[in-house]
Amino acid sequence: MQPQVILNEKQVDLTLRRLCYQLIENHNDFTNTILIGFQPRGIFVLERLKIKLEKILNHPIQCGNIDITFHRDDFRRRERPIIPSVTNIDFDIENRNIVLVDDVLHTGRTIRSGLDALLAFGRPKKVELLTLIDRRFQRDLPIQANYIGFTVDTLISEKVSVEWKETDGKDQVFLFTPIESNE
Image 1 (cartoon, rainbow, N blue to C red):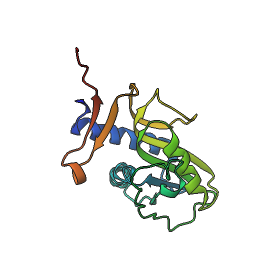
Image 2: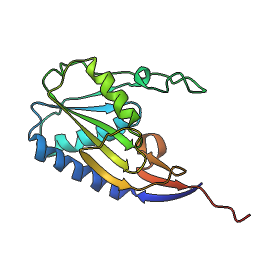
Image 3: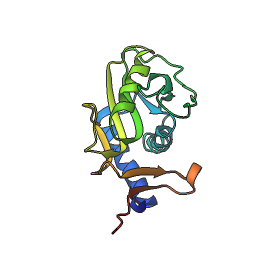
């Protein structure tokens, strides 16, 4: 597959900063709002947002992360078993505004699983979705994000990959397109 950088390090940073200001516009000082990242990749987006928001607002933001492994509809269909991560929601979500955070919105199935997992912790007042990348045309479920960093229209055969400094050495987003053969 042929990789194409669709967001470089500077663009990722600017996109995250813009998302912070959109969140502040709707949630003010976050007194009744909690950000929750999806394991494993959404927590990278969450951590960046948390750092930026706390710097802008000059106070801590309540955050958590959730593992959706056992709520996935493909849990038992995989060749290799999925290894669960740690859920960290040690606070009450009842009647609070929740912003779910993930790196890529594709089919919507991860978000559906995340909603199922979240409801095991209580009944939020409102749930919104923030995604760094929205693959707009591949939904299996009627789910859309409230906050979108970057929208990319992809084919089924294409893949989007978000890389982070912590795991990949650099913050960037790639679009992988299959190389056509002229045979």
